Length: 300
Image (cartoon, rainbow, N blue to C red; front, side, top):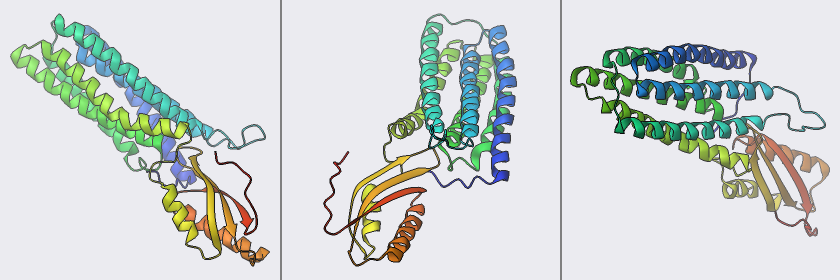
């Protein structure tokens, strides 16, 4: 699911700039959308503004996590702050679920008691949202497969673009039909779209937060790959987890032939690490055991 992020200085600056531009544009749009929602009494606009607010918070948290990963490890935090990228991704998912609940609750109340609103004004504001959200999504599209938080930012903004399209059509229909109940119906549709776009992100974030094997990596395939090497007799106690949303780690016990000398063991270790790197595992710790050794470690 995730590719190795090379973290070149230019790439880091580009990602940082994408976050800052996206945050600035969406803060401005939230002010316009929320103000218009209150003025024209549109729940669809207010719902989308609330959703966009959670997106801004998500972008801010993702930017913070992105910067925390650049802090060097120390004696207390031996992996640095890389895990914050996973925690932020999980927190953003929960944020969105809370937003969905609030939108649905308010939409049901509004559906029962529709209120007068300006369809034309809704369509104009939604049109602005299409441009801003679409452009923000474009900022992340190039790097969306390199990091779970970048993917989350892209999915949020792409979903927002589609939502704005729906709100625009709602405004047009209300203008020509005066069907005020459409405002509440579209708000519920917005909530459903958010829910579906959040499900996969929530699942992946939760799995990584409890050190599950990252998506796209199979322990059985890794074991088979390692055991293809003729010097290796057996592989056990394999653990694979995510240090961050871009860096994966592996530990394993490798049983080897007694005939291997120190030079051969060093070459074998390098060969294994090169193979694992191509399976998106960047941090590898291997423990060699000889034929007559009995592993006393219990499987955890």
